[in-house]
Amino acid sequence: MECSIRKGIVQSVSSFPGLQELTVELPEGNAVAINYPDLTGPCQPGDEVMLNTTAEELCLGTGGFHYVLAICGRERSLSKLGHIIKLRYTPLQGRVLSVEEEGSPYHHLLAAADSLDGLPVAVGSLHSMLAPLSWAVWKLRPGTRLVYLMSDGAALPIAFSRTVRRLKEMGLITAAITFGHAFGGDFEAVNVYSALLAAKLVVKADLAVIAMGPGVVGTGTRWGTTAIEQGIFLNAVRHIDGVPVAIPRLSDGDQRQRHFGLSHHTRTVLTRVVDGSVVLSLPRCYERHLQAEDELVLKRHQVFWEETDELFSGLGRSGLPLSTMGRGVEEDPLFFHGVLAAARTLVAQLN
Image (tube, rainbow, N blue to C red):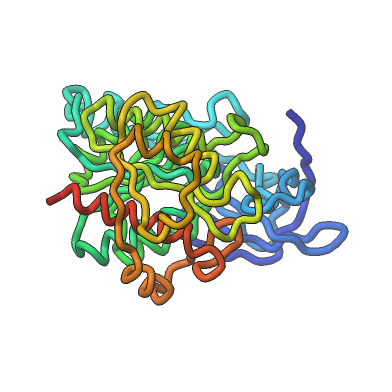
C-alpha cells in the first residue's frame, strides 16, 4: 500500500466536535485538510503539518481531502482511558474505552448479555440512508430512542460525518456507537454484536440502525463492495434475537444498470449473504419498477409494502442534508422512498 506525504503550513482553522477543517498552504497554493485532534492534537494557524495527500491526488469523492498525520515539533501523549486499540498496528493507532472491556462501567451488563429481546434494527448499505430514516422515525413516532451503529466499511472517524452531527443537534438520534475500527462515537464497541447489545442495554434503544460512515467502496463487481456488510449485519441481528429490517437500495436516477431499480448490492445481500428470512420494506411506488430478478428476493423474505408519499412530501422540508451519490431528493426519488418504507416498517415493529 502506498501513500503520498507532504508538508504544509496551517493558514486557518474551523473547529467542530472531534474534527478541524484547515486551510493549508502548499507550494502550488492553498488546500483543504482535515485534522482529528484526538489522533494528532489540535492545530492552530502557523503550525507545520505532515499531510497524507493520497485521496486528493486520486480525485476521490467523499474522502477527497488532505489529512493531518502529525504536527511538526509537537509531541502528543495518551490521555484517555481504555485498552482497546483501533487502527491497530498503524502509526495512528490509539486506545479507546470499549463498552465491553473490564474497565468499562458497563462491563457487567455486556458480560451477561446474550439477546436483543426483539429490538428492531434497520440495516443499510449507504450512509446517505441515515438522515431520511432518522427523520422519518422521528416524524412517525416522536421521542423514539433511535441509536446509530457506525461500521468501519467506509469513513472510520464518525466526526467526518456532518450528517451525524446534524442529526444529534436535532435530537433525531439518541446516541452513536462506533464498532470495528470506526471510532469517535458516544460509545465504542469491538464488533457489531457487542455494539448491538450496548444499544439495547446501555443506551436503552427503542430502535437501532446500522450503516457505514460516509463513503463506500465499489468496484463494479458483485462481491467487491463494502455494501456486502449489510448481509453480515442482518445475520448478526438474527443471531441474537433482534428483528432485522433491510433497507433496500433503490434508484430511478442512477444511470448504471446494476443500480437501477433494486440495486445488485441489495439483491446479492438478500439472496446470497443473508442466512435466513429478514424483514424487507418496499414502497408502493416501486411496484411498477419490479423486475424478474426481484422474484427470488420477494419469495425469501417477509416483504412489507408501505405507502410513502406523505412522508416523501415532507422530506424536502426537513432541513437535513439529503443526497445520495450526488443526487438529491428530486433527482432520485425512488432511493428516498425506499428508505422511508424501511422507516415505516421499523417503527411498526414497536406496536
